[in-house]
Amino acid sequence: MSLFHLPFRKESGSENMATDMWLLNRVEAWKGPIFRRYGWSLPQVTFGYGQKAEWVVRETGLNLSSLTRRPTGGGIVRHGKDLTYCLIVPRGSKGAEMSPMDFYAQVHRRWGEALSEQGILNNLMPCPKKPKAGIPGDCFNEPVGRDLMDVDCTQKLGGAAMKRTRQGVLLQGTLELGSWPDLDHPKIEKRFLHLIASDLAEEVSTKEWPKDLESQRKEWTKLYASLAWTQNRKAPESI
Figure (cartoon, helix red, strand yellow):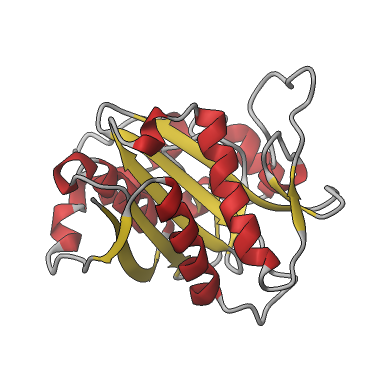
């Protein structure tokens, strides 16, 4: 089977969220995991599915209309210089059968190996003996167990959040690499893909975007661009 690797795209917050959900809803038909790395047409702040929009507005000082609520959990993430990606595994696959925390740890372990080869030493955040209750507020200021950290576990380098549906598991992740502006992101991505494909017992296969992607994901884009979703996780009346 194949781990489908899609080309890099740089888009808005709503378009990026729409694309990830569009892919999640097709992963069973494609019959294999899906990976993509993506960028942002403008610096963007996203926040987790379960967070309260009013708190995020106060915490960031931004207008609600300039924020994007993700379909996955977690806390506030500031995008622009990061390496953002999504990894989707279909129901019944090796990745989907792993426990969520084991899957989360293995993804970060493999990114850590790719970064180590570029001279960035790292560790996984140890799991606390007593897990902290509640939703993280500001993702990179509140590391949790199995996040990717620097070698001393004082600076967070990578975090992610997941959504599980009948189709499979969506993991949306980011590596904060602003301290290393000259890193070759495609090279790091290629190494990560080689490692994680082996873990998932898949072969990496390049797949192109459909020419009518915009029309296929249109309803998802409307959802993630709407204030109704950003404010209260509701679909606008036009959908």
